[in-house]
Image (cartoon, rainbow, N blue to C red; front, side, top):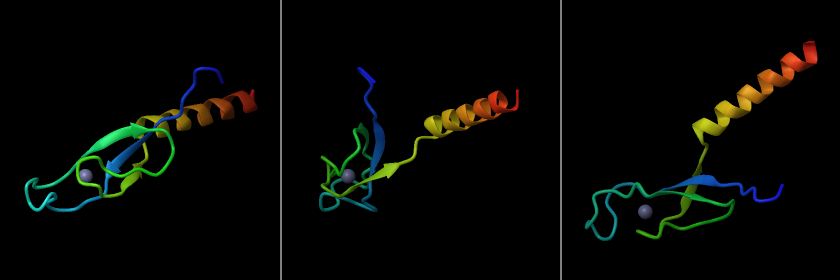
Length: 71
Ligand SMILES: [Zn+2]
């Protein structure tokens, strides 16, 4: 698909204070293409966060396909 770019939400996996306690916590989130990333703030690994919106869309599409199949 031309111009279509998959993006995934990633969140910093660090727990508790980071940068030697300078920051109380790091909740850095960002959209990336699929891959492996590290937090630019505290260098902890970024973990993939399933997007609620895209899951909802998938369910909608699934329901639509079911409707089409039963017609
Ligand atoms: Zn971080």
